[in-house]
Length: 446
Image (cartoon, rainbow, N blue to C red; front, side, top):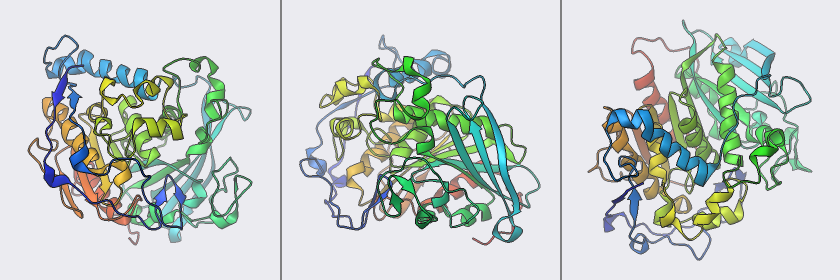
């Protein structure tokens, strides 16, 4: 992949800040947390680098839109499979699902709640995924939906006592006993999932606990859905955890395509932090998703790896060796040898909608690098006849945004988290581009 030089302005230098009470990687931390020492948080110390150009083929020839669609997109996707996330298996032939709970009385009768069990192998002996859904009740047509994985079980996104308490392995944290959830964890992450606010804007919500797909620890890829595919391990492009989580989102999409209450042509896949990396990879590998949202996804997500700002490839592969494929370790401290960078991941979503969001105090995730990915990836959107973020656009100030026709970005003040501020931008962006202007709103309080 040919390279493209990128020149940065010194105006983007930001001070290192200490983050209080940060929600890091899905675990609530009550003590003061500061980005690890020994890493770069100084814009003036970002090394010079050239970005691989997705619009130039391996022979150095500039491509056109027809070539991108016919071959170049597939080549770039293969490079990510081989060098970053690893391969994925196809949909299991015997997969089926069962709606085991449905109520039209959620939120005072204004919404529908569904709980669906996805049987990956078709029976209870294999892995099962619990999909929780809330849908506006009084829409005249099927509802568009925001789909995303959650960190600690479906029961944590809302205090609704009808939500099944997850029984799978959980990371240590408040309310977790012997790596299992208790009633004390119910609704604890509701701040990240403003369900009634989303419903009030005319969208449904669908979510699965990421640990139903694969537990988030280095288990040698023996648990979760990995146990079904031993032949996809012990190889350089192995089926990694992020790839498995993205694969699980596609299995949820299999169900949503069949649910008559859902407009499967208008499903947005969303994720925060490591699950933001997952949402981007899901959007790249599965073109059924109409919109992809990355919230504070950082290294291996939206942030450019070559900047070596905040978390680096070596740090992430050392701390979380299961997230990426084995081949990714070849680029530990060797980012310039990587044949792709994260702007090309954004490009793989074109011409569908994509939204990247950063937080001003989240220096570990390199907010400026996330913005640069959205801007550089926009070049493929422009090639395909869709407006992205202009090449001359400057990084917006904290609290501000840049919205192109198909690519959106905002920088929120504050820490590594998902807040209503973020959701309001996601909903407005999706509403303006995915819904007809005359569509009535459901009568749900926001």
